[in-house]
Length: 233
Ligand SMILES: C[S@@+](CC[C@H](N)C(=O)[O-])C[C@H]1O[C@@H](n2cnc3c(N)ncnc32)[C@H](O)[C@@H]1O
Image (tube, rainbow, N blue to C red; front, side, top):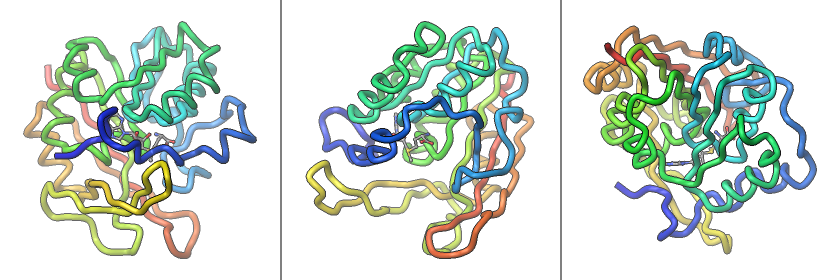
């Protein structure tokens, strides 16, 4: 399966770039939903004080910066494979080190190198959406301490309204190369029961999936799946 790596075009070059030019603030709130304007927040992750936390596919690290600033984790590592996103995150929030640690890596090798390290791993429409779950979920289970939690949000259905998949299969979705040429990348948009079965198969228990309805109507709005699971002891 193809992933974002340094040897392929950075398909996240444009993402968040305009906002980064005008908004350098640490967000005062944390949202899971697609529209980033409501719904549950960081409380879903439980008490993070003194915890070791990882953001999988952190982008510009706005969510991680919020947690580092307002929730006192021992350490939060914001992992992203995109050189552009890593540069943006470092520019915006590098000053939050050492509590916030910004890492450029594909999450799968990162997690393999961090066995039994994390108390909490989370992803907001991040690497969990864009990485084969058969690679990512066992790696996340390995990197969590027994009893540690994985929480992630992803699309409840495709942006054109088509239903999510009934099996662990990706779709090709539109993307852009750094020079603006249209291309595609894989996105895993899976039904709740498919995530549940995959999480169970790869070492998780106490699995819950909530559907958070879109807060607005119109094209490219979406319901959000908010998934939580605990690494089996
Ligand atoms: C839609 S963006 C979301 C970024 C951020 N979570 C946010 O909410 O703004 C998806 C991000 O996941 C990253 N990503 C996708 N697959 C990844 C992987 N296997 N390893 C690391 N990062 C990945 C991309 O580089 C991109 O920055």
